[in-house]
Image 1 (cartoon, rainbow, N blue to C red):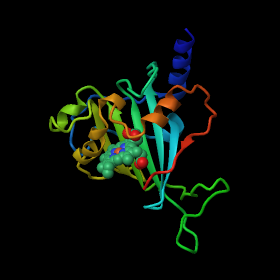
Image 2 (cartoon, helix red, strand yellow):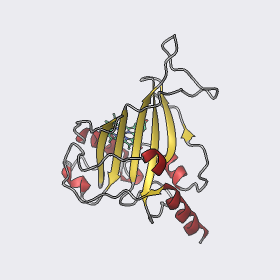
Image 3 (tube, protein in one colour):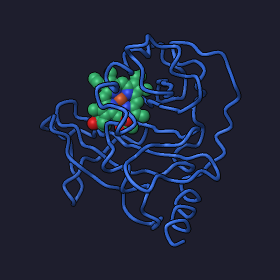
Length: 195
Ligand code: HEC
């Protein structure tokens, strides 16, 4: 009962009516609309400083209204959405990223790229059989929300090695933690990228 209640609360926190109509699938991800208002509607679950590229990546998750968060692992239900927002670090006079008092990179206010994964029945069929991540669909947008032309098979190629056990996510540990944490005000997980 408690687990059910918690799951319900979490679903409430991360829910949003994402409203995907069935559309023609295409390899440039054009069936995936830009996720308007994602910062307000989805939950930020990880922030990653990338020293090699002097950027910061923000990861968000959203579940469709009424969906239950998984009790373990990070298998997401149909309609789930994952977003990776990328912002450039503000550079100091030495050309290195400036840091806040906690030692984390300070970022530009606007992103330069927004990558989206959406789980939707049949979406996997647009990719070659050996390059499938279940029913995840992919798209990438410029910071202003306009679609970036990109062969999304390349997205799949990088996510497929993670395997079905983690639902082809690159960030299962932080994601699972956020899905099972019902405290809305908890700060997002931060971890340093190895490179
Ligand atoms: C070079 C490998 C690579 C490619 C290509 C790639 N990704 Fe990822 N993706 C990652 C890694 C690594 C992470 C974990 C976060 C991080 O360190 O950036 C990630 C995380 C994500 C996340 C956050 C959820 C998760 O799975 O952990 C989304 C959403 C995402 N990628 C979407 C895309 C989309 C859309 C494309 C194609 C436009 C794409 N990715 C292409 C490596 C890749």
